[in-house]
Image (cartoon, rainbow, N blue to C red; front, side, top):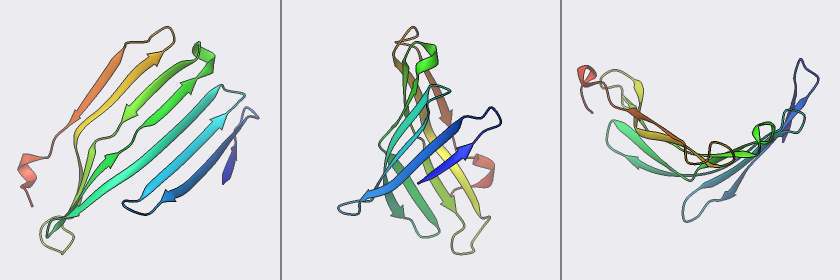
Amino acid sequence: HASFRHRDGSETRLVAEQVAVSPRPTSAIHACNNALGFEMTSLARPEISFRGNSLHITMGGEARVLLRRFGDELYVITRPTITSHGLMGLGEARVELTGSLVVRCVSGENAGMRAELWFGCDAAAGAS
């Protein structure tokens, strides 16, 4: 549990807990700032696989951001895959995002709007 005071005098409160360890780890997060009309909840269920010199993390779950100041607009966000290379000291140590990050507005004035960001690996860096 944590709270953060901002220059405008408002406070953002944060609660983050690991809510399950089996069959796979699951973390729940809630953050809110009532003065700014912001609330975020997130459920993260990472699926981790070790691939020799790299670690591959597919992040299940989603984040939900509610913006009360904008007519109770609710956004649902999915996350890209994270890969960490060079774990065994072979090749360059680097972290890459691959796949897509999707932001969908599911309620409010902008309901139905969607943005998708695609991430790809750096072909010049090679694969591991």
